Image (cartoon, rainbow, N blue to C red; front, side):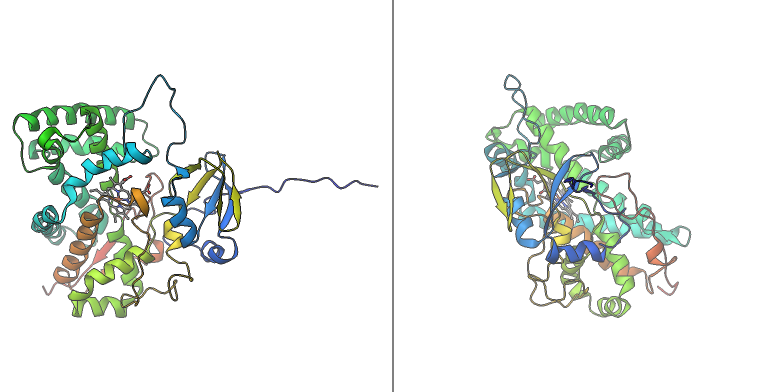
Length: 392
Ligand code: HEM
């Protein structure tokens, strides 16, 4: 007679499939059936996968979940940066957020609009179909971040070269690029100290009461570059509008609705099914699952944005959605996206300008067939050929 042997169930590999523009019905369905589950992440390590809204909010805001996956040796205290917890993070964040106040944002708006217009001019002058990604979606955040950081025009080509390596998951030169960037930013800081300008480094250094070391300021600038490099929501937004032509036509007729449409785009579209990994620091319960200190957790806010307990008909794209409950596209809690206002502005002005200046904007290939990139931390559409009517 065979004896029964208890076999530990095999954990499923996450992500369940490569991301190609839609969150799968299975993943979205798990919000209700399996909001907290155990998976294997790409590095082969097990982790808790948290998919519901309440669970994501808890994991992103509760101090029992840490960003610091590997404790540094005690004789090597790390520089304070945004990837830490508690007081170290807050000290850096306080300085970082100096550059994102309402007054400064109002000051950037006409500059961002001018940059969008220049890029759209080039699309109009260039061959058709035009590529929305290389024409607008990829270069705009680079131009904006150079403007914000105060990188002089003469240095921009070189600067872009270094940035290209920064969010890559395949480019082994990215360490080299980060080193060059470090040296460059150190030089810029010295220059801004001697002669302050209207840029972010100057604002951060203002008054010298920020309490951060020069190295910590450079790490902060690098963190901002990493966060601000890719604003894939513009391409994802145009894609979802192409899939909903009546709502696209509505926006062309009523551009005043674009800010609300941007919020729905941010809620509904995802550019990846991954998010950052955190670690449990003391035993804690999420939903009805007990987690132990040392466990790793991935809470995915893009999936939580489809939680039916929070959003009515969550899998329906609706720019007129009411009530407009807060989505989690910019995260939640202490690490809530620092560039939210700038990101919203970039997506809003890009979409508004495309709809105003390119009449009859339409995809040149079926949007379900657009290629998605898997070489970047943030995913995103790789190439997006579009056409429009000549009668402008
Ligand atoms: C549509 C575009 C964007 C989206 C969807 C987005 C989303 C996010 C999310 C979800 C987080 C939280 C990450 C976490 O909890 O670890 C975050 C953090 C951050 N983002 Fe963004 N972001 C966007 C654009 C930007 C831009 C344009 C900038 C800079 C100008 C920026 C700078 C940052 C920074 C510095 C952080 C780290 C904040 C901290 O750890 O305290 N982001 N972003």
